[in-house]
Image (cartoon, rainbow, N blue to C red):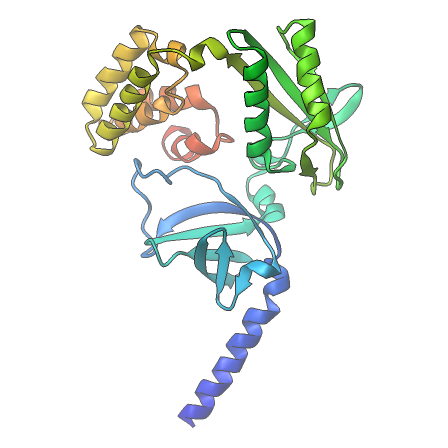
Length: 310
């Protein structure tokens, strides 16, 4: 009897796993992360406030594991929720499908806007077209522009419209302080270097990519000083030296360090966490709000837990 029960259970479980393959296909968005024992992450954990996306397909599912890049995750599919756990850490990652995520958090539904006399929906950190090999494309453009404009400083916004449920796109340059020749260089590069993009969302999406080039800074002899300072801030942050960190960041701000160096993008997160650790919540919320609102992934969870009034 025992053996028969085990065999029956095995077939039921196997059938369950295989029957869920089609349900696992698609875009999943991270809802939360906990430790495997269910406890919340510490406020200075690097994953405390993040939102990740995963596009799952049949080829990624190997038995009771999902392979994402070089990583292998054990998974559980339960109540339309995908729970991943890596053998390499003690974390659980809870994902829901994109449609469910928007139902739970409607603030992430793209806002409508009018551009080029068309009603479009503006992409955000969660809902956006999939730009394949964007990192390579972006790196190639920066290299191209640096070679053409060494010693120049200019900025512009790249507007890209991707039509709904398609790969068709158009691009435009806006808010530019470039010369006519520089704009021609950018447009020539875009014409010769097509990128692979697809919009699976049910609306035409507008994505905006700001570019701010100062090629003089690339050869700045102070580069090492900036990098060393940035590494030091990270060091004392993860050592929980919060009072020292607050003093250090304030001093650097008075010296316009962050304005001049281009570093310190996440300093307000470190500053906010430091204030929280010292029970100075008002100052913490002011720091987080400098980074964005509840639709900004790297401060979202801090704002929701510590800064929203009941």
